[in-house]
Length: 368
View 1 (cartoon, one colour):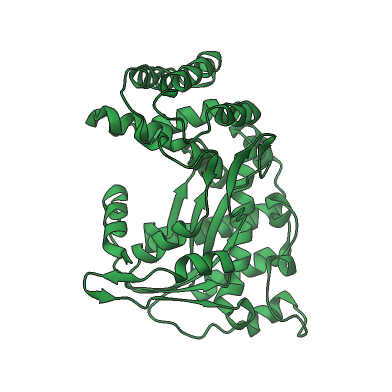
View 2 (cartoon, helix red, strand yellow):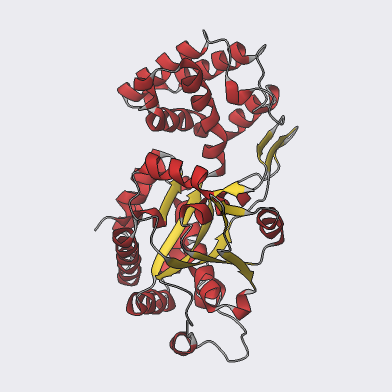
């Protein structure tokens, strides 16, 4: 049984959300769901975990019919094709997608129909490292440091992502996240060593703050989120992220694509609002649900966008932006308009579980 208020109230307070009580209908699809991320003797079970994205479209009010016939005509999708998928609109990485005239048609149609975009983007490796900072700050209990948690997480991830192979090997040797009390000081000492080597890659303030926090960690009696955990299991599934979205918008209705692992995870849960059991979601086959078909294209497009941010720094992105074709610029502008309109409608539509650095990369690439 899940008390939706326990989950949503914390998110509302943390992010200052003001419109989570509004009534919408959400349609969902997902991309880059690796289902589980763990460390093996030879490295990660998924060598290159891309950004996991839950995404789709939403509209105000209760469920209504979404007629795709006009869109199918505009996209020249054959009548024998049962449903619209990203592959019917465009193929390739994000920059290749931006070259497609059909992407322009699709995004223009979304703007004309008044639908909003929503998403939750999660970098699996970033998510796997945040417990280190959370453990230190929770055990230390200094309120002023708690305010710097996002900056500290970004700094630590910036250090660790520079050599993924080395980071995975470090995690393997310490059975991370089950580091335990006996090995915690040695683990923190190794993190400090890596910071010392890569110190110049951070700005001075971030490097100084991270070094100070790691020094504090070496003197602590415990690291609570790095003890009595499943050894070598970084992520045991993504069902929780669907649950958070459903709980946050408890007055809305949520229509999710059939995905057995997620369906089994959520189907075992009962959502309650105080003394009231909620019936606020259902699963649907994509070929029967136009909103999920639209969401497939959005999830794929955004998944490729966030994966691009993972692989390229600001300098790389600056060069890419300089060489965009007119078609790519038009499509990027349309995507920006959709995101801006969606954010203006409800900031909670857009959720990031990625590093601040990657958020900055995204803002830079999407800037006018």
